[in-house]
Length: 282
Image (cartoon, rainbow, N blue to C red; front, side, top):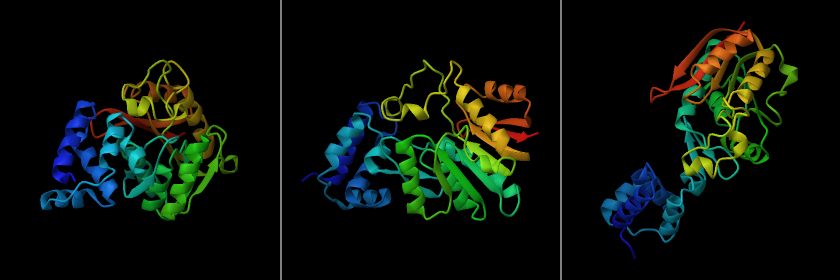
């Protein structure tokens, strides 16, 4: 039997050698998953001389092969929620919590019972976060990928949050809501064609449908989604859209040229990189 402290230290070294940037954190979280407990409890158990769980080494080797941590644990934290994720769905990122926050702020400012639409919902992260933090909101979400839609449905059921989730194309979704929506939020595919992500977790495991923006500048799909948002929103309604850190000027400029938007502003994430554009329907 292996001492838990020694096992976690060895796992941290193994993951660091494999290029995992958060090696120590991942080593602890994998131990927590294998033990069915929290990271805090793992750290206590390390001090108390507990034994490493039997499945730990195999989990560490999978992570060293750059299988996403969230695929191994089946869970991803997002704002106040814990979501179910796995193969076939884009793993929600910390930077997207900013995007959700901007949508939540816009929903709160819209009135007592705002109508919010999440186009390209993926795991359902943004839509469910909005409903969780703005309970009176009427939240709608659409996802094109079959696997991702299934994960979003699981998360909707698991959280018990009442949203309307449909399987379909974001560029044609919810025609019955045209001109009535207060906030549209989207984290669309936006990676330029030909630019392959460096991180193996993204390149090899996130679905291509959720990654590539359909053109050399990566903006073809985002702009098609924005056009749908323009139809959905009432005058004065708000669009919140995530983008690549290289699109902090190009996406606002493209929205300005479209003529449907005013008060276009770009927002940085916690690492001071351009991350989301907010625009008001003219």
